[in-house]
Length: 149
Image (tube, rainbow, N blue to C red; front, side):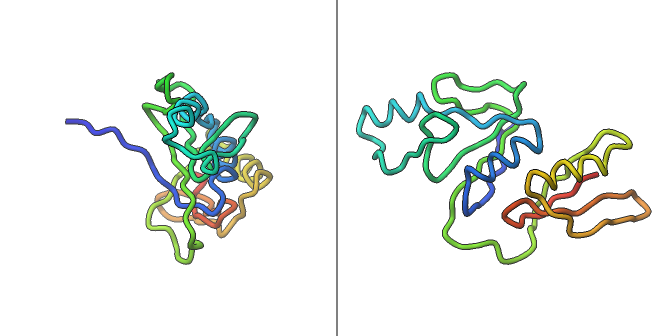
């Protein structure tokens, strides 16, 4: 049996994280506005749990990004393939990630990619050169580590 999964990332500002990662990966922020309208209409979701995000109604405390080529549920806007969900949590990040993303640049384009994601709000932590390869360890705008290979 194969399981469907998503990566969930705790965040202080899930929408800012979604914008950063959508731009970094070439993903799309999910549009859950039809689902939210339906839930609001049924009284199952209070208005206070929503915000306007990129010109449409969104959940206040969570948002996902998905690969643009993957299928999604048109009624809910939820991706059915590669996706990352950002959820608001009250506590800040305090220690090194136990799980991280590796972003693979095209051959010979690592430094260009590092510069591009720095312009989006990332920061370089260190540059690694090991017998198995080279990569740049970076942090996203909330301090989560990731690598550019």
